[in-house]
Picture 1 (tube, rainbow, N blue to C red):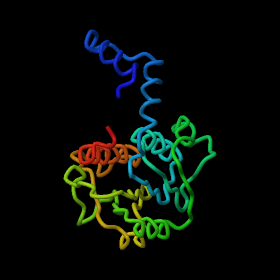
Picture 2 (cartoon, one colour; picture 1 turned 90 degrees about the horizontal axis):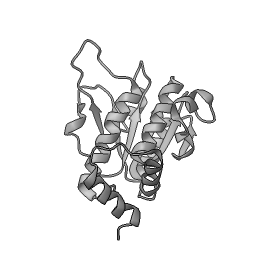
Picture 3 (cartoon, rainbow, N blue to C red; picture 1 turned 90 degrees about the vertical axis):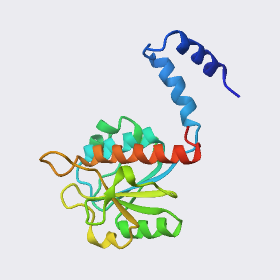
Length: 196
């Protein structure tokens, strides 16, 4: 059953399709969105040095409705003013936990049925757009310089990468995460209709 807000909103959009939403309208829409199921996506950040990247990943994780972030190794964690600067409060809305050892986190997630996927350039990496998650995903993002530590590779089921066409061979970790996270959301939304 559609809410009165949805009915009024649909009628108004028919009359004014290119009108920008007001702040109260955005807030009302987000209240509805927050009641939906969380996306079966857990993010494992392994030794991420930049606290700005950590904050930006929190903000994007909130945007896609991710279920959890694991902050592993030297990755900083809240409360931290540098994280808060880019997270803008998302560090309070996305469940998170800290663990020194990422491999133990991945073993637990694998035992719980998660597909462990690296965001990494490897010989076996596939283009992210060709990869279709089949079950809940644990997305592993490694250090900005060295990538994912070698001891984690044997725990992973797949590796995905983003094709680079210019002189640089990689994107910022938070930007790359955003691309992959919305791809995961889009595929799961298409498969299940749950995250509509």
